[in-house]
Length: 216
Image (cartoon, rainbow, N blue to C red; front, side, top):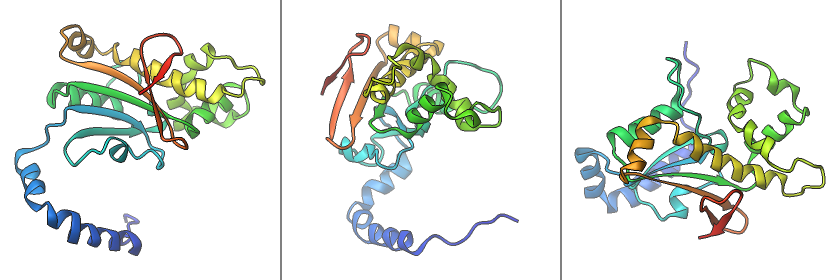
């Protein structure tokens, strides 16, 4: 038996509000999207964090951005093992089938996944080192970044440094996908790295220099 229950009433009410306003006022656009399919110009890899509202930040409408979310907005290296690879599958679909022109990785401040990686790598979360920890094994992608940052207790910006390193590692891993590397070299695809300060509402872009993110 599948343990599924009706939608919470507050979500159902919000849906009906959306259906009666936003949808009703743009009915033709939604029907056109349904009939013609999606043609997003960009893919954005973001964190699952509910505070990171990607479409709001970029003022994006339905059909504009192909969004994939995961813990700590990480991209794994190219590893065709035959196992389940949700992020890699989303990337393949966006680049090979949707033919997006841009792939954007966006990190953010106060990232719980990054803090979890710091705890794991510093020995303060041994349970995440266990083989059955899905979060721990996913955050192994970020371990090289932890090794590159200043991990001294005096470094108050440790989390922010690793959040940005996660963006850089993901960009490096994207280039390990053969079809992405080829598309970049043919100038058919560009890669971008961003970091968002949630509290300040600011956005910073990575320009290729180690550790350097500049305000957008």
